Length: 165
Image (cartoon, rainbow, N blue to C red):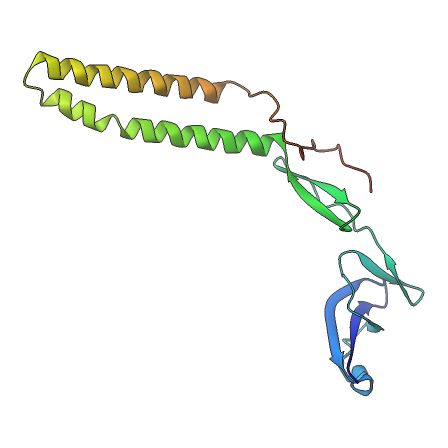
């Protein structure tokens, strides 16, 4: 009968993430050097072997960055990466910059219409459209300068404010 075994490092009990499924008599030939085997498929990120038994293990928290922090999820036994306020701000700024680029691209047509206008009405219409676009672009540029209020994202956790495991 086939069984599944998980391999772990004998020096620290950490699972290596590899398994063997087969007959028990074939197991010794498949155990990596420096490893032991324990029956079952075990999660390498949340389990360890201690004194021959599989136990829950909380891995070290991954390092935080300006744009990412980590929160421990006990039910999942894993660290969840969570965007920081800086990540939300960067995303918002990228969206605003994209809107500005799109608005600036819309200036080409009114500029062309102004350049080839044959009468003052066409010139005035082109200037009006350019002025509208200029006001919209100015408002978007002001948005870039303003620091937004907290995004209010439910999973936001500032670096250093972790949820204790």
